[in-house]
Image (cartoon, rainbow over all chains, first blue to last red; front, side, top):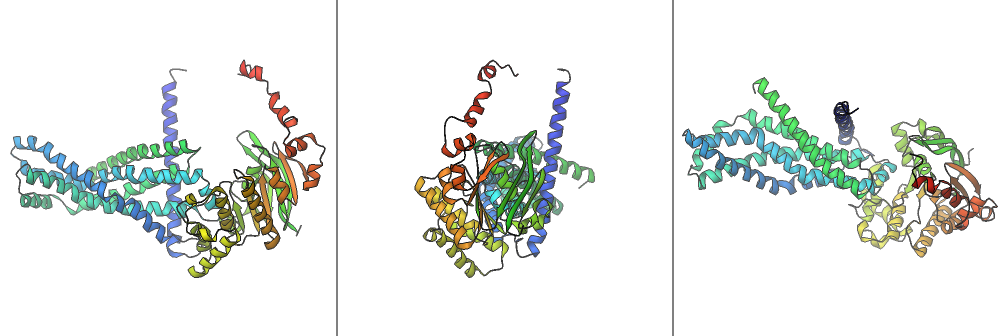
Length: 269
Length: 267
């Protein structure tokens, strides 16, 4: 029995992962089928533009400050860490190139998504979980108002759209973080830094990063909504859902990013 | 048949291996207030959730206003849900919305009424439950009894033909509880609404019921008017109705051997 235990554990984990992915896919399917009629239909299928706008403010606008601060600091940290190494090869002027490409292709979208996971993902899971516990979701269903249409669709749309906007801000703030250190600490002129940045970044880096951000936002919000609306038990269940949202999302984002990077690498993009 | 609002035929519900409702039959007449009594875990809330289309039935049928719930498509089920109202145990108000918005939501979602008309309708519903002056408050700013009344106003938003109440008096003081009961009676008499009330509060049940049924271990064991229930000679009914500490219900709890449980003889 003991010999088979690890195999059984691996099997159980694999089953759970596949089941979880299946549930996310079903939720995505329900949300997508609800978006279309919501945009073009009237009675009983309204998206609730006020609701969507409120979610965009909550997820996006309110997190601009924290995302900007985190990515600005990462830009600054990268500059300080790279300078001693690049100096050995007389290539300190490459700091701007590296930060620019890293930010636009990778760090801007990823760090913004991870920050948003803690800021908005956990909050969405806790909110929907509390609504489940207090019978609000059941009340919506009893009034023929689909919780997916009324609650999930606005949150997924808002997070996806705002994640793309946040990635643009994160890209810029990361570059500015590097610029700040280079200008005030490393004696690299701002003009040189910006010129190097613009020459290093290509449109495909920018667009690829934005596409990734959209996927990150969609996955982040789907996980939060799924775990929130499936809370079992009371306050403890809400706590579990919140923690699981943060952990599962960060793992998912990392794997998705790895997938994108591998795909771009092999496609030569 | 035509004077029936709800007809439950051999309804069965299982959760895993446990049978919660075992082939139960129930008729609810149009315009009557039927109270479903039962202890905790007797299956009464499960039955209510099946009647509102919240959980699927495993066997038998539930017909509401001539429609068999298990045969309805998603769209038909939604249409059915707009014709009923449900008051949940906690009130289940949407905490992010004001009381007025809670009541306006189903009107905004399911009708093409102008916002000004919706505002008037909301005021009418709030006046009916005595909460008009609290319209702009959030659910967190009002008391438990007020939440129940607001929940009732929301349940009535689309002028339903049938209202389902899940433990309307639970957790309320006697005066507030009596006020909720009066509201239920008023809605039944004035608007002719058919009411199905799930409760274990006997005072409330006697006040509002035209007819009562007692559910025990997934089966109805008795049905009758308040007087018939009071005069029943069935020991189980008498124990439940009068809240006696000695009787079949407490006896049953004792039969699971405490000693063998302690000694883990069943493991």
